[in-house]
Image (tube, rainbow, N blue to C red):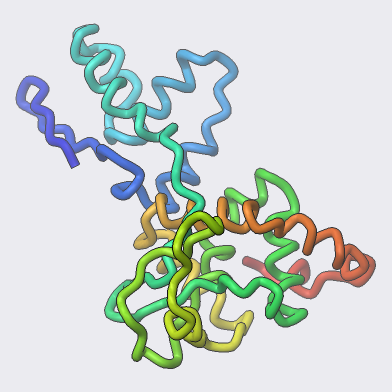
Length: 221
């Protein structure tokens, strides 16, 4: 975080995606202003906590400086998901074995990401499906799953960790925790990885599941 002093007021501005949580990202993506300048002002307002009227009263040089600091929101992230995340003392493991999803798990995942808007609105719930508590905590420290053959793959024992069985009843509570506490770079990398390994192909192969009424659609999220 970077602190800027404007007159008698201190403004704290995040400097990277590692300092943004899911909730902030969802708020930014709710901005639907028609004109680019209005959207730009709204994004700066969201990231700084300043009201738009306060931003408009800033000297132009100060506004340009703050706006430049906010450009990180468009940074790209790696297609290498973080395998292990610790939040509030609990270690969560990434569901990298997509092919091993149980039917209920996949149906809920598929429903929550039915379009781009739904994906963003349900991002915390999607992460709650993909990241679940690890059963066996005796795992070597290893951060990333490498995607490409040109990169050395992790040892097999590192990839043999187990996460808890998927339960819809636990989804909302874990999702609300992740909304506040999970870093955006971790979230976007996890989603990018799914695209990189061809999750779309898995979706297409299971299109027949969509002919059934979706149980999660009956539940209030």
